[in-house]
Image (cartoon, rainbow, N blue to C red; front, side):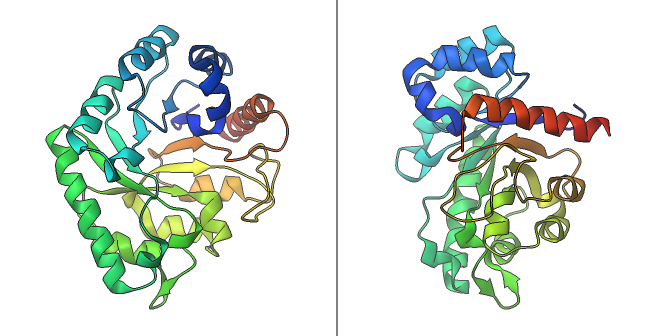
Length: 248
């Protein structure tokens, strides 16, 4: 595939809890060449060893622990698994996205963590759900207002499905955010907050238009939070669909 493609391992979290190494092998066999961990602090040396053996790159990781644990230890774990892009995937009170003061506090938090990340040779980013999209601050989605307060090196990982659920025209949002976006979560489903997700291409999301609006170098990361049906079948279908878009 021309554009970089990865899998967010939260998609297969239950299977990983039972057999991490076997799941990573199966992910590689499905044709995913890169993964995005959701907890880099669990056995980082063992994780890196298995990923290397399977030829899986680990360019990006979620790091929820940065909000609750000593950042230096978390960054050390991230360095061990080899990721250079570090994403805060939530954990900030929803109310902070409803006012300019709340957004300023959020930006200060993220900018401070970005300085810590830079000292380790990493870049920090933020991942949205619907609650950063639904509130309008002025005439813009809260996520857009936040982007204007972030230091230039802080990137966004736009979850395209939750952005749509929150009321955004996702291709238009991506065009407005431009190069601030370094990664996308590509997922699909019926478009509701509670309904399970489907394979990419099997739901209501305008995936071709979304991908066309994203920066060419941004990571495309498949994630299905709660899957309808067999998750590995959905991941195989998702990859085949995304590959077909590249070949069209």
